[in-house]
Image (cartoon, rainbow, N blue to C red; front, side, top):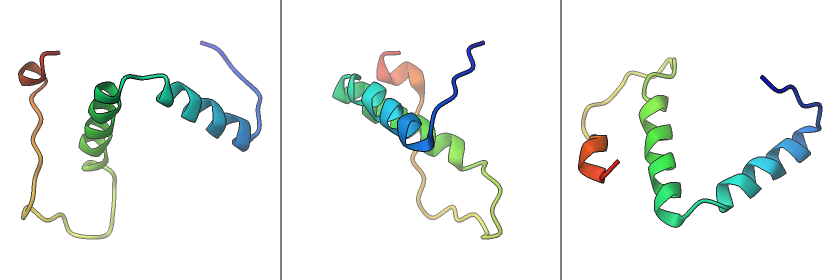
Length: 62
């Protein structure tokens, strides 16, 4: 495990740089995975099932 001491601005800049190094298709996959993880994020609002995107990794060629 690596520990880095940096400012928030430096951290954000590094994350942006690493993200932009990815291929466009990889960026989309990362976005979808983030959305999948956010559905379990605690919130006061009731979850709606009106619209869902379901991603099966096998169908994406992963």
